[in-house]
Length: 385
Image (tube, rainbow, N blue to C red; front, side, top):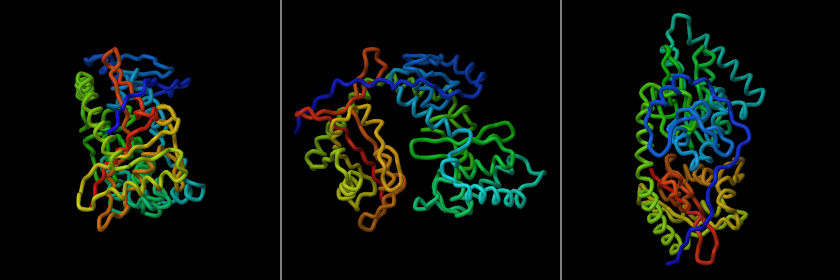
């Protein structure tokens, strides 16, 4: 057993000199102003160059929590603003070449002429688009155009990004107001029908999705979703119990660290074949007889600070993203014995945490071994089918 200590490094929100202008949210801002909060408030404020407000960050649960407690959520706010860039137009612009764009435009024109007429209500148009995508497109992460509307509409094969881009493209062409919403590992849409916003998820066959949990940026709370008051009450409850949760998590991951060291599940950032080595290490530790299991690894940061490690991106097989996202994406669909790793499997980094003197701020840092070397825990939740 190793005698572990926490580094003194303190997480501070990264400075941003430019914030992204948000849509007018006067009614929502007034509603939010009347909601009681614990340990902070929902008034607009600036922290490390970021505007923490409903107007700028929106009304997702993630955004509301950040506005209440900006000192602990600078990195979260950055991520919200990154995703906000795609809210109005989706991500097609970064995937489609000119030939694909023209093919999509031609398809949309033909489809609209064949399926939409002036007598249809917005609800009927919404349903027609939803039915087309859920009935004709196959989920396929191996598709070369899996993230674009071209993959969905022309090749009929894509993943969630392609479904959401295709829904947005068809909905806009048919006169509906539509948005593109991102979570850490998923994409879906908001659509306005007869004056009411709904979340819809053609990837997961949810015509009117009843939860937007995990969403980064939204300018409205759609029907059927949790209300703003309920979202804030969940945040309040988490804030009230933050100290107990931090102690519990640290104890849990201390045990995971001991298990990983005992299993020699140790990896280093300076490994030139890091992704392949980690994938092999994870698969080798999976028990094909267990449908659900947790795999813990130790990843030494090899000199990178907490912030450098947190923000670090890696390129692998044409994909550039944070390391844990790449590991998760490449694990999904792999075969282990006679089983396959399900798409719901995930991979995350776990850090040491402390509660700040204000009783609200969560201070994250890397773990440190007895020799003074910093590392993070790699936490893989594996589901087999």
